[in-house]
Every structure is written in structure tokens, then in C-alpha cells.
Amino acid sequence: MKAILLVTLLLTSFTKAALSSEILKDFDSLGGNSDLYKKAKALSPELRTQVIQNRVVNRRMRLEIAPTFTTYWGGNPYISSKSAGMELAFHITPRWSVDLAYSFAFQNNLTDEGLYFVARAEQNNTSDVPDVDAPKGSILGFLTYYPFYGKLNMFDNIVHFDIYTSLGAGTTELATGNQATVGANFGMGIWWSQHLSTRFGYRFQNYEAQPKTGPQDINMSSAFLSMGYLL
Figure 1 (cartoon, rainbow, N blue to C red):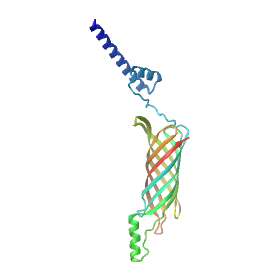
Figure 2 (figure 1 turned 135 degrees about the vertical axis):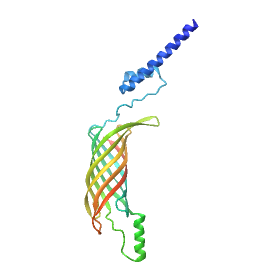
Figure 3 (figure 1 turned 120 degrees about the vertical axis):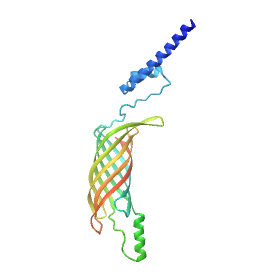
Figure 4 (figure 1 turned 30 degrees about the vertical axis):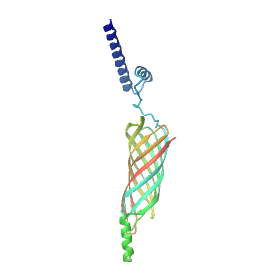
């Protein structure tokens, strides 16, 4: 009799575990079914399950506003720049957006190489100082494509992210005037909630500066960071 009871209990436990596993498998493959989720939780209350199959942040016909900080390198070897600005991204679908990026340079400093030439000119009492056409700001428009997305488990919370790339054009304001500019982005957008976002990445810009020594083709690289709000 005891053996029969033991076998019955073992079969019941095995059936319960198998059913729970099968439901969770169905739940995972379906990408989130509330009825299956409730059954799975009832059979295995100690198991923590979160739905992460689908995008949880709606990005259809939504506007994102993002203050942005950018630091630059490359281009003219005698000057380093930093800028702040604002970016607007209108998300048409989760995969496509059109963006407008405005920035103004709040710092244009001579690099170590530039300072060396200035010090040498002062020592030799000459005017042989670096000839630079410093950037003051820019306005660029981009078409952005989000080909890859995924999820991160951060402190037991699931957050979604997208890897994106952009192509665009606009104008850069220099000390000598405005110059046509082309640009490209490669970055990551993290969507913390239905309204909060963070972006960081790399941007390339090309324009023609006009120093006194003659036109100079500038290939500028930059790293940017923004904190956004989706309306």
C-alpha cells in the first residue's frame, strides 16, 4: 500500500513538473499569453518569468526629444571641441525615424600640438601660430534605421535596446561662415520606459574649413550621449 502511494505521489509530481515546463515552453514560443502565464505561475510560484519577446515601448508616430552632449576628435589637429545641443527624433515605425540634430560648441581649445606651436612662436617672436577655422555649431538632418534590437537584464529588470545607423546632411557654422556637411551615426538607444531613453554612439562629419592657408577637408569624429523623453 505504501509503495502504491509513493508511486502515485512521484507520478503526480512528475506530471505537475512536466506540465509546468510544457506551459512555460508554450508561453516562451508564443511571446506572451496571459492565460498560459497564469497557469505557469500557479504550477510553479517560485519561478520568476518575464515577457521579453516583443517590443514593450511603442515607437510608432512618436516624437523623442533629447538633450545631447558631444565630444570631438580628428579634423584639425590643433583644436579640440565639445558641444551641447538638442536632437529631435520622429519615430515613424520601430525600425525607421527621421532626426534633426542641433549643436553649439561651448569649448574650442588648442590641443597639445597647437599649444606647442603657440609657445614656439612666442619664444621666437614670430606669428607662426596654428591656423584654425573653429566650428561654432551645426544643424544636421538624418534618416535612421534600427536593424537590430534586444533586451538586457539590468538588476532583475528587463530593458530594451536598439542598434541603429543613420545617414544625413546639413550645415556646420565655422568662424569663417557656414559649410555644407555630410554625416553618419552608429549608436545604441536604450528604452527605459514608455517615455525615457538614453542614446550613445559615434558620429562622423565631413565639411570643408576655410583657414587662411586655404580650404581644408575636415573629417571629424565624435562620441555623443543623450537623455531623451518620448512624447
